[in-house]
Image (cartoon, rainbow, N blue to C red):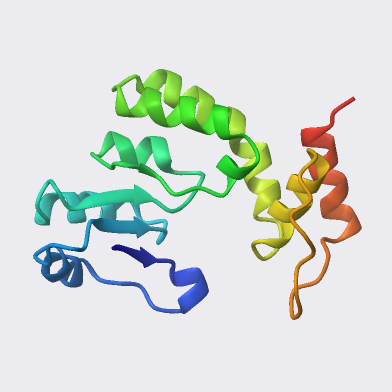
Length: 159
Protein backbone atom coordinates (compact mmCIF):
# COMPACT_ATOMS: atom_id res chain seq x y z
CA UNK A 1 0.00 0.00 0.00
CA UNK A 2 1.19 3.52 -0.77
CA UNK A 3 -0.06 6.43 1.32
CA UNK A 4 -1.00 9.46 -0.76
CA UNK A 5 -0.37 12.85 0.81
CA UNK A 6 -1.90 15.43 -1.50
CA UNK A 7 -2.94 18.33 0.75
CA UNK A 8 -4.04 20.50 -2.19
CA UNK A 9 -6.82 17.97 -2.82
CA UNK A 10 -7.63 16.84 0.70
CA UNK A 11 -7.03 19.95 2.79
CA UNK A 12 -5.00 17.86 5.24
CA UNK A 13 -1.22 17.42 5.34
CA UNK A 14 0.01 14.17 6.90
CA UNK A 15 2.65 15.02 9.53
CA UNK A 16 6.03 13.29 9.73
CA UNK A 17 5.05 11.78 13.10
CA UNK A 18 2.27 9.81 11.37
CA UNK A 19 4.77 8.48 8.80
CA UNK A 20 6.95 7.27 11.65
CA UNK A 21 4.06 5.09 12.82
CA UNK A 22 2.96 4.04 9.32
CA UNK A 23 6.53 2.97 8.50
CA UNK A 24 6.18 0.24 11.13
CA UNK A 25 3.27 -1.41 9.29
CA UNK A 26 4.68 -4.08 6.95
CA UNK A 27 2.20 -3.68 4.08
CA UNK A 28 2.74 0.10 3.78
CA UNK A 29 5.53 0.57 1.25
CA UNK A 30 5.80 4.33 1.57
CA UNK A 31 4.24 7.61 0.56
CA UNK A 32 3.50 9.66 -2.52
CA UNK A 33 4.43 13.00 -0.96
CA UNK A 34 2.84 15.98 -2.70
CA UNK A 35 3.00 18.59 0.04
CA UNK A 36 5.63 20.56 -1.87
CA UNK A 37 7.74 20.80 1.30
CA UNK A 38 11.31 19.72 0.53
CA UNK A 39 12.33 20.06 4.20
CA UNK A 40 9.55 17.63 5.09
CA UNK A 41 11.03 15.10 2.64
CA UNK A 42 14.36 15.32 4.47
CA UNK A 43 12.59 14.85 7.82
CA UNK A 44 10.71 11.79 6.55
CA UNK A 45 13.92 10.26 5.22
CA UNK A 46 15.72 11.02 8.50
CA UNK A 47 13.04 9.66 10.80
CA UNK A 48 11.68 6.64 8.93
CA UNK A 49 13.42 3.37 8.03
CA UNK A 50 15.23 3.30 4.67
CA UNK A 51 12.73 0.75 3.31
CA UNK A 52 9.89 3.28 3.78
CA UNK A 53 9.90 4.76 0.28
CA UNK A 54 9.15 8.37 -0.52
CA UNK A 55 7.97 9.09 -4.06
CA UNK A 56 7.61 12.60 -5.39
CA UNK A 57 3.97 13.42 -5.94
CA UNK A 58 4.79 16.74 -7.60
CA UNK A 59 6.15 16.66 -11.13
CA UNK A 60 8.25 19.77 -10.51
CA UNK A 61 10.22 18.19 -7.63
CA UNK A 62 11.33 14.60 -8.33
CA UNK A 63 15.03 15.33 -8.96
CA UNK A 64 15.28 17.23 -5.68
CA UNK A 65 13.35 14.55 -3.79
CA UNK A 66 15.50 11.77 -5.25
CA UNK A 67 18.60 13.77 -4.26
CA UNK A 68 17.30 13.43 -0.69
CA UNK A 69 16.89 9.67 -1.08
CA UNK A 70 13.44 9.53 -2.64
CA UNK A 71 12.51 6.41 -4.59
CA UNK A 72 11.08 8.02 -7.72
CA UNK A 73 7.98 9.84 -8.85
CA UNK A 74 4.28 9.08 -9.18
CA UNK A 75 3.71 11.42 -12.05
CA UNK A 76 1.16 13.18 -14.22
CA UNK A 77 3.59 14.35 -16.92
CA UNK A 78 4.71 10.73 -17.42
CA UNK A 79 1.34 10.03 -19.04
CA UNK A 80 2.23 12.48 -21.81
CA UNK A 81 6.03 12.13 -22.04
CA UNK A 82 6.85 8.76 -20.45
CA UNK A 83 10.32 8.32 -21.97
CA UNK A 84 11.51 11.77 -20.90
CA UNK A 85 10.11 11.33 -17.40
CA UNK A 86 11.74 7.92 -17.10
CA UNK A 87 15.09 9.30 -18.31
CA UNK A 88 14.93 12.06 -15.69
CA UNK A 89 14.05 9.62 -12.90
CA UNK A 90 16.70 7.08 -13.91
CA UNK A 91 19.37 9.78 -14.05
CA UNK A 92 18.43 10.94 -10.55
CA UNK A 93 18.31 7.40 -9.18
CA UNK A 94 21.77 6.82 -10.70
CA UNK A 95 23.06 9.91 -8.91
CA UNK A 96 23.44 11.97 -12.09
CA UNK A 97 21.67 15.01 -10.71
CA UNK A 98 23.03 17.39 -13.37
CA UNK A 99 21.28 15.37 -16.08
CA UNK A 100 18.17 14.83 -13.94
CA UNK A 101 17.89 18.55 -13.20
CA UNK A 102 18.35 19.44 -16.87
CA UNK A 103 15.64 16.99 -17.93
CA UNK A 104 13.27 18.16 -15.20
CA UNK A 105 13.80 21.79 -16.20
CA UNK A 106 12.99 20.90 -19.83
CA UNK A 107 9.73 19.33 -18.64
CA UNK A 108 8.66 22.40 -16.62
CA UNK A 109 6.66 24.21 -19.34
CA UNK A 110 4.57 21.09 -19.92
CA UNK A 111 4.25 20.43 -16.18
CA UNK A 112 2.96 23.96 -15.65
CA UNK A 113 0.48 23.55 -18.50
CA UNK A 114 -0.72 20.21 -17.10
CA UNK A 115 -1.48 21.90 -13.80
CA UNK A 116 -3.12 24.99 -15.28
CA UNK A 117 -6.52 23.56 -14.35
CA UNK A 118 -7.79 20.86 -12.04
CA UNK A 119 -6.37 17.44 -12.81
CA UNK A 120 -7.26 15.47 -14.95
CA UNK A 121 -8.65 18.18 -17.26
CA UNK A 122 -5.32 19.23 -18.85
CA UNK A 123 -3.77 15.75 -18.97
CA UNK A 124 -6.80 14.35 -20.78
CA UNK A 125 -6.60 17.22 -23.27
CA UNK A 126 -2.85 16.62 -23.74
CA UNK A 127 -3.39 12.90 -24.28
CA UNK A 128 -5.95 13.67 -27.00
CA UNK A 129 -3.50 16.07 -28.65
CA UNK A 130 -0.89 13.32 -28.93
CA UNK A 131 -3.35 10.78 -30.28
CA UNK A 132 -4.84 8.96 -27.29
CA UNK A 133 -8.59 9.25 -26.86
CA UNK A 134 -9.03 8.85 -23.13
CA UNK A 135 -12.58 10.14 -23.04
CA UNK A 136 -14.18 13.29 -21.75
CA UNK A 137 -14.07 14.51 -18.19
CA UNK A 138 -17.24 13.85 -16.25
CA UNK A 139 -19.12 16.54 -14.37
CA UNK A 140 -18.38 18.49 -12.28
CA UNK A 141 -15.20 18.74 -14.39
CA UNK A 142 -15.46 20.64 -17.64
CA UNK A 143 -13.43 20.71 -20.85
CA UNK A 144 -10.14 22.61 -20.79
CA UNK A 145 -10.34 26.34 -21.46
CA UNK A 146 -9.41 27.56 -24.93
CA UNK A 147 -6.50 29.56 -23.49
CA UNK A 148 -5.01 26.53 -21.72
CA UNK A 149 -5.60 24.30 -24.75
CA UNK A 150 -3.65 26.82 -26.82
CA UNK A 151 -0.74 26.59 -24.31
CA UNK A 152 -0.78 22.79 -24.46
CA UNK A 153 -0.80 22.81 -28.25
CA UNK A 154 2.12 25.24 -28.39
CA UNK A 155 4.16 22.93 -26.16
CA UNK A 156 3.15 19.54 -27.58
CA UNK A 157 2.60 20.49 -31.23
CA UNK A 158 4.97 23.43 -31.76
CA UNK A 159 4.89 23.37 -35.58
